[in-house]
Image (cartoon, rainbow, N blue to C red; front, side, top):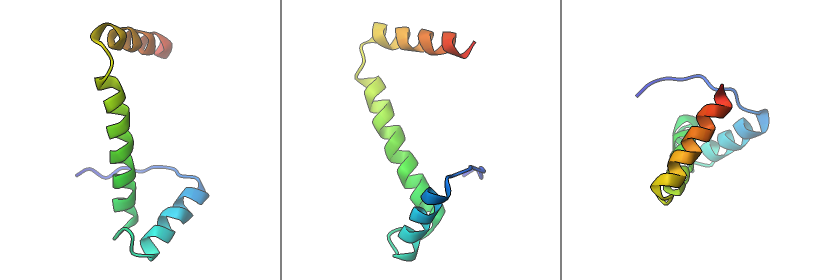
Length: 67
């Protein structure tokens, strides 16, 4: 596992800490990993459901917008 640094709004950090204090998650890191895993699962599922041509068009558009 890699260690990264992120900046969060104070409100997010307080919510994560509350979940940790309530014992919902054993640590703030675990809460963030869980949330990120769910987010990526949802996002990737969206891309997996696209037909190949639409996916390629989105990738090209995204690359063009980065330039």
